[in-house]
Structures are given as structure tokens and as C-alpha cells.
Length: 260
Image 1 (cartoon, one colour):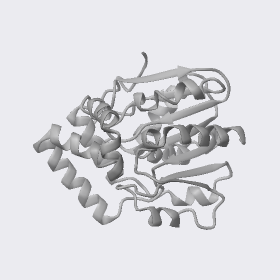
Image 2 (spheres, helix red, strand yellow):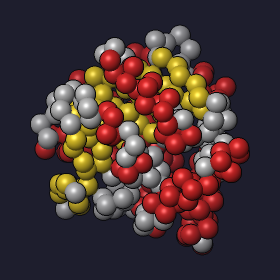
Image 3 (tube, one colour):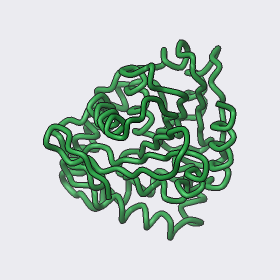
Image 4 (cartoon, helix red, strand yellow):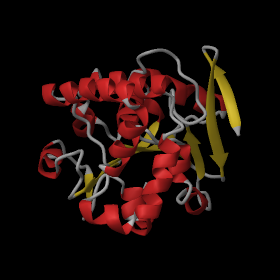
């Protein structure tokens, strides 16, 4: 396991393969192990970087609110350590929010951007209220909150079909400390709307959505890429395309990277 220190906080990352750099950013209640099926394939042609975001996996908490900008700064700290000047970014869910924050802070360092089951839009008032409810729920009953949250990310059919895989995700999620869970929820709640980046940035962009995503309403997600050059990929399942549509996702990413 590779680590750097950032503001006296241990940041855990992996660095595999050679070639143009690809940075994979996990979502809420996940860690870099979510990419373990993709890394072997992608690293045959690319230098693949994964890292645990603040308060998740083997990366320590930095505070009681982990903003998307805070997470973007640890991404840059790792890339600086590895002397990577430019990269393709793939962000799942919260990882997409971090990738967008990074793209705003370091536009010259982005070669391309993929938002997987993610959005450029800020939380609505309703979503913010849901985050507050989630914070209360996880403080009251941590294990039940985590297990229910993970199960609810999959399409209804896949909750039965992928029982073993979902259990593995739950086990990884339960490694996230309470402070890390709350700090991420607080950070997502206050994140900026960055839809403008999908319209005005010059590099290739892709949005990957699930038609039955329980977290992001599919039709609403389409609005942000109207009149843009963002490539759209739609899978028929839920919020966890890297599990629900594993092989198809691999082919989509490799095809997109090849054209950059």
C-alpha cells in the first residue's frame, strides 16, 4: 500500500501500469477496491491511479467536513508526488463530484473526464434535507444505515441477482469510520453546481448513467448535457455500473480512452 502525508493526514493510493495516466475516484461509502476488476485491464495500456478519498478506505479523516475541494487537493497531492502532469479522470458518484472540483481547480491538468453514475448539479433543497436525515440516521444506527444505503444503490432486480457482490460492497463500506461517513455527507451537501464545466471545457467528456438509478433520476440527469459535446452512455440498471454492468463498462472506458 502506498501512502503520502497531506496536512499530517495519511492518504492511501495505488499506482499500476505505464502510459497516459488514468485516475479512478470512488464514491461515497466506497474505497479504491471498488476498481479492482477494472485496474488489471486498464493498466495493460495505461498508468492507473486509484486512491482512497478523505475518511474512506485507508485514508484518514482530515476534519468534520470533507469538501469536494478538500478531496481534489489530496488527488493533486498524490499526482504531484507521482509527477503526473495531466490525466484522464473517472469518478463514480461522489468521485465524480471530486473530479469536477479538481477540473475547476486544475483545468490544465485534465486530459478527459468521465462521470459515472454522477452529476454536475448541486444538491437540491430536498437532497440537502436527505443528507441531514442520513447524518442523523448513521449516528443513531451506523451498521443498519450502511447496509441499507448500499443495498438501495442497485436496481431492484439486481438486489436479488447480485446478492454475493452486494454483500462484499457492504463489508467494504462498513470499514468507513463514522467521522468519514458524516464528513462526506456534509461535503456533498455543500458542493457547488459545476454544470458549466460540461458546457465550456475543451477536453473530451462522457456521462455514464443507469436508467434505473435509485439515486439519480435519469431524465433529470440528461438535462445537464443538452447542447454539449458530452458523450452519453446509458446502461439499463442502477447506480453501480462497475458491478451491474461490469464488462460493458470496461469496453466503454477503453473505447473512450482510445479516442483521446
